[in-house]
Image (tube, rainbow, N blue to C red; front, side, top):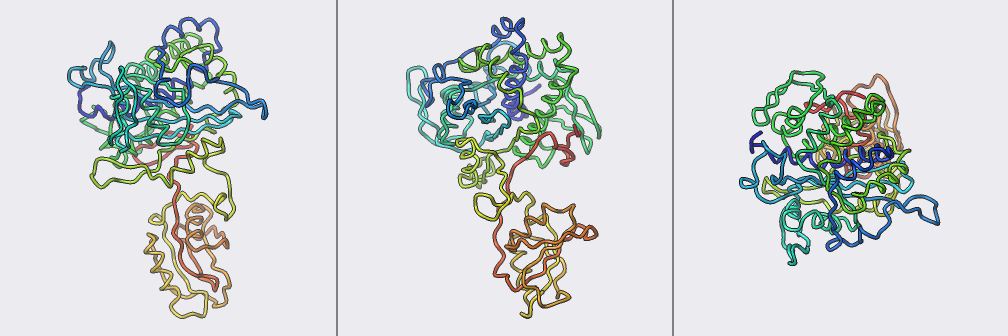
Length: 474
């Protein structure tokens, strides 16, 4: 495979690290494999650069007060290093020097071990690179792209960059190189994908017809490398596709066909650990065995993947973290509380989660008051917020005390967004209403409120029919 599109392929490596963590803890309880798997993993001490000492902090300790495990936060990353064996076809070290972690996932597992969240950090996020120790020197301290942290100070510097971005204390990491991806996919017998349109991508060499496919090795790598011919062509769209690919991979591994086949399971575990580098704690197979036991109740449906909220820098190449929107996610990890939050009330801490943006919502506006031209006034405000306003007119009555949203139950997410914008909790379901919502302006109306949409992919096992990057239902 050529250099063209290489950055795309490197993005998946962090996702493979996540799969490696799951695969390793699944098999860590099989004692006969312990010695072989232990010999596969490379340990790297990052204690010089991180807040917590990963060589002494308990990995799977139990909180004496609550009786639950301590929450676990791990930085999962991919190395694009071309040095060493097994990376042929991706460019040589002389052609592509250094080492970067183009996409990183911060994975947080709850203390009760029943849920987890993985947050992707895009490679081109601009940050102040942390001051790190590397070969006896202090490096960093200037602005650059997030993925440069690996190049200047190794995995410990990437972890420190995450610490400074998030405010979290993190001492554990996992990293995988190019060899790991193809070996894992081949070991499970391929991963199922489902395309809503045919794909012919000359840069990655991917050519697939519409419908279901089981991809392996080079073809699987091409699928996650492709960018311009899948989705909207953006890195964030590609990240969503790769997260869905990871979910499909994990589902394949958790299937009885893999777990109950000793030969295949050994091959998967061997592939998962062969290209793995981790901190001394996660490199210890006995620690992974204990971790495996603690994760026995963690179900795939309770794992959430998202990308850190971001905003463009205006240069067409880089982005910045939207710190205001990212803060609740980091706080949830720090406090070990669920994300997304499960509140449904109207106060700030339990506001309903809004997933459908205004520009995807069509609405008719009717005046239910005695104030002339109120519907036109509201329509202007809704359009300013991005809503697609269709008809504007008068309701069948002028004595509506409360603003009311009428909607088809199939469009409940759109109704939540519109109700939040109209600052009302009065809604009516109408199964015959169709895709166009109706808002009847009541006497309580003051002004259309700005709404914030939660940019998050929830319950990745249900990611299906998402345009060109659609995945088959599980």
